Amino acid sequence: MSFKALPGFRDFYPAEMAIRRHVEGTWHAAARAAGFEEIDGPPLESLDLLKAKSGDAIVDEIYAFVDKGGRDVGLRPELTPTLGRMVASRAAALKKPTKWYSVPQLFRYQRQQRGRLREHIQWNVDVIGSAEVAAEAEVVAVAIDALSRLGLTHEDIYVRAFDRQAAESALDNLGIENKTGALQLIDRGKLDTDAADEVLGAKPAAALREWFHADYTPEGSFAEFLEACNSYGLSEYVTVDKSIVRGLAYYTGTVFEIFDRGHKLRAVAGGGRYDTLVETLGGPPTPALGFGMGDVVIAELLKDLGRLPDHPPRINTFVVPIGDEMLGAAREVVRRLRDAGDRAEAPYVAMKLNKAFKTAEQSGASRVVLVGPDEWAEHKVQVKVLESGHQESVSLDKLS
Ligand code: HAM
Image (cartoon, rainbow, N blue to C red; front, side, top):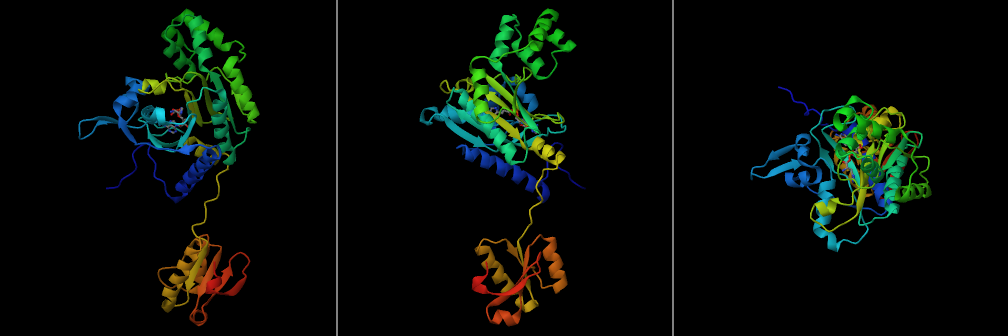
């Protein structure tokens, strides 16, 4: 019998794990650079919480089951319900604005396709307790900072933003009652298809198309948001795009998604303002906003553009015992090097010199330390730098 990971789930062998750590490390650095503090919550939440945030239909899109205690539970498909719950239960004690980030593993029961799996790692960056557009611009700036640190520029990726309120007031003005249906048509790029006539009726669908394709001048807080983005140096990244309305019901203001310029992949990130969620989850009225950025699309994009970093070498120093009787001495050298902060290892059994040098090269080491009996008696070892071939005798207490 042989076993494979479940469809849509990934094994992270060292090469894949190195990419994941590269991306996650960048996320942590960008969030901390902007003063965000890390949080996490449980991967399993009560189904009621997930439904309260997203509606009953969420059950079809997640891993939901009854646990052994008879509780209805679900694996978290996003962090936002947990974050909303955490904010709601400590709302009074939190200093506003609260700036939190998180790097959770999420689970969604959806059909596997390029850039969309049943499990992914998603960076969440949220500001709680601020109604200011400056906070919206800041989270966009943090997202772009991370992507820049990963080697992506405005020629590779861009932000498409819109004002959910402008979309909703257009729907009001046009007398369209099925707002959720209309927003989802826009979100899924279906407004110009027959599906729109079926969902909204032919006349309202035509009126909505007319609004959608007409020119639009940003106003009010959305215009201020765009200006704030410019002062963060994002003018080459941010575009206004009516098709970004985020079909999800809980967004209330500025919404945005980040895409690759080549339009080959699904969204890299998405988010926006969600001012009513904390209250819906039992907390006081609390403005909030943020975004999620997944690891899957980023890794695909970096791979497509050839911007993945080289696989980092496993060790820096390979310590070679000259003969079996020097194995213990080699281990002592290894311990000294590790204590000094180096990444070092010795083989478990002694090996011939040429095999030792080949092994050192294969492991990515930049130097070899030779531990031979005569020098060891004088508390010395030979250090050879592989690239230059330079070799010298170094006393043990000078080794670092
Ligand atoms: P979302 O648009 O569902 O938003 O997901 C955000 C990002 O997570 C996507 O743009 C994508 O990069 C990644 N992602 C989502 N689903 C998958 C999947 N099945 N496989 C791989 N990657 C995926 C949210 O989840 C919001 N809760 C984000 C948010 C935070 N809004 C405010 N704060």
